[in-house]
Amino acid sequence: MATEDDVRRMCLALPGVTERSSWDQPAWFAKTLMARMWEDGVMTVKTTEREALAGTEPETYFWTPHHERSPQLVLVRLPRIGTEELGELLEESYRLAGGLGS
Image (cartoon, rainbow, N blue to C red; front, side, top):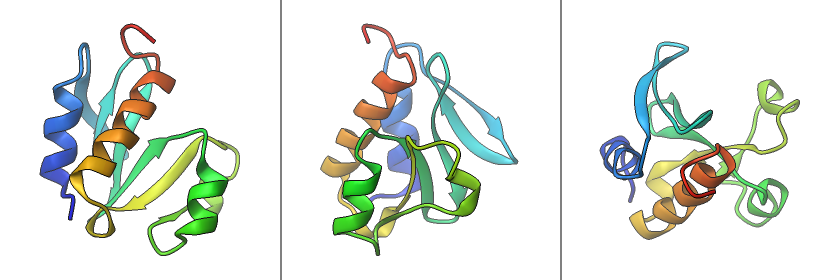
């Protein structure tokens, strides 16, 4: 089970990532937003696999009408994933957000 503390630790371990508030929630930025807490236990990340993730695991991955215009954003229920999967999601999001070496 992944937590917000895991998100923070993994994001800040990536080169050049900073943390600041976005919509009154903790958020992590490479060149652009890479992850943000949406609500307690739910984070937003960027992925090229949004449709596939939500299609195979809709209880874990989903989006709201707010995210419709941003097809790379997906919401993730943290209690439903492990830290290894979290790390993979954050690494992809980091690359898509323009992280160093991307």
